[in-house]
Length: 548
Image (cartoon, rainbow, N blue to C red):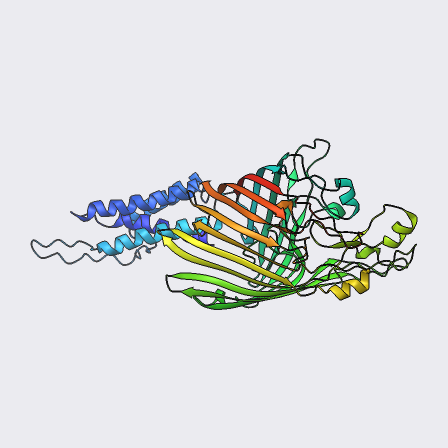
């Protein structure tokens, strides 16, 4: 119906342009009006709205109407002869006047309305996407990494790697240099449903299933026997009844403020439910935010041969954003990460499997561990070790990030994290495992960066230097950094790096980590401490990343 209305309007404009007397200075303007209108008809033909035959018919009809009188006017009755107009006064010429502003307004309005409607309704575009795809936001990235792992010459362990593995030390190399090429690929979308609901899904490379790594999406190249594995890294529904409230559930990523990788490595994707309240979405300057969530870590269903409880994380964070005029801005937050049933429980008898499922499903290295099947292994002489975490983990974490304008667009950014594992209790560990473990339950990490605060445009850059100190049981080694000391806790040292955007959404980054163990190796259940193992590890990474 709208298209027919436009056809009538265009025909009327053509007829008007051809019917008005062309006197003196108005002749050129009327021709312009006619030509503009005819051009619009031709534009509709090009867009597929009108056929050429229909357009020619409209123009011809308008020309005929213009020759006989204004478009749409009725013929005079035959019974009433036309009345001759009064003769004009001497030297007076009557010219119908159309103000210049009116003519300009007619041209602009017709052109803008027709083109806007054509664009909105996608006239003449048979390959146009359906309207519902406009609710989707697509995103993804690809990273190519070359990694060089080096072990200083003073790495002279007093036990072989096989022996260390037998005592739960999760390493398989301490002396031989290694080079690896790795990729990370991610792809997903967020879809808005109505005004308050968003559904998101995302795929990512990396291991899946029981052999997967919850903190890494890297895929090491050099295996032509199989394809790279891909799994769901995001799958969630997010309900926002107000702009400052978000209720989200599923595989949701990491909803917590985390300026460093002391507790959370970047690729961790948590599963569960969370509620977020953030007043910065409706205010400027000072604001507060809070996040609370419940996340299943390992679901253990009761069976006759196992009564192992499920492992959960209950987490809470409260923080604030501060703006100090044009001088600085910053964020300060405190969090409490309460892991339930994360510690191992020894099987009570020789043949028992009641608590076998309390073993750590994935661990790096650093946390104190013990053999859940120690009774069977010591009495029967087997090596079927089943390692559980010795300590409970209730982590108190304070995080901060401060951004200072420096010179022009260059900023100075200071990030920091501190953690204390309040769940570590020597007497509780002694009562449950029979072993006394030294208390090493604190850690901290800081980073100083100089450059652009947002590295998202061509020629933006940032360089940084930092230091990390994470005692053995300061934080759960499952989710912490996987690059520094090749992952885990019980390590200290520095790191430096830089990133540069060499093309739109394309960056190159170089990072160097130099780390050494803090205490060497200490195992709950060993006859003596295997100390004196420096296990220094240096890592160089060169990354090229492209995102959309």
